[in-house]
Length: 318
Image 1 (cartoon, helix red, strand yellow):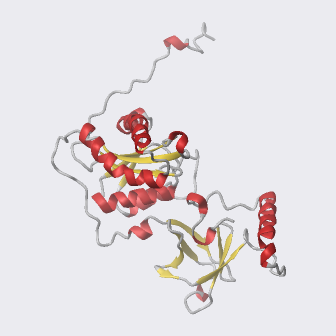
Image 2: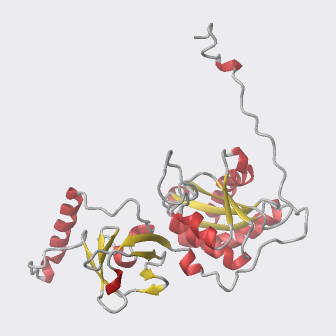
Image 3: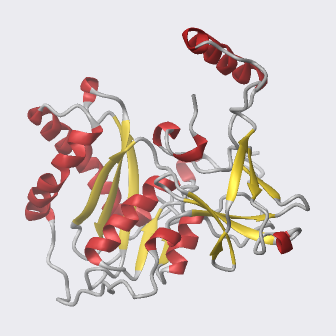
């Protein structure tokens, strides 16, 4: 194969060239975002993820937060905090994590946009996905610095939980930026103020369309939602409605901007209603039910969003 030119010796292969990219001119023109899973508290606490927002023009840390994982809801909360403090940047710059880009090859359904991308689009903010880690070198280099410097600072402060870590981060960011931030080429800050019509609650909610059945029901994450029959809901049979799953656990069903009344029937958590259990035996019965559900594989949908601990709203586990 080498002689025929089909295969090339590893030493002779052309290596990709990653040339440096000039910084953007203005603060707020491009904000690089990333998450880094690491033992931030070493052996004093659990492994977790630290989200970072860094300004491309200055290498300034704009936002840091410890979270359980790089979930869409965690990025929703981080982005919302950022926008409320600084305003809307021109664009966010990220890797190709599933939160930011549709990675399924040959996908033909949907609009080619993730929930996070859809939220930014509603707020008139672009998101750009880098093709390589070298392309977003500033945030990658910041990650390496933080994995060294931040870990040591947390150790010196005796911090071992995400809650106390998040309380520590603002002071750490101030010191970090004083040491490492660069002056921008332009003094102009291109962050845009939030517009009057920017609804952050609705923008940073997980949204999915559902078709209402003839019996005025719809299903989401293995929960059956039963619309209360009234003048607004009766004409909705076979119509499309939008479900809003909020990071704080609230759940709303809307049609043309109007909230619809509903009640729920949870297929996962449903227990035999004929069984009457004494309070003293309730713990044992619930343990048995949980084990049975585990055996039957009755878990939540993998497509629906997950919250840290899954302990909020109508989708509680346990």
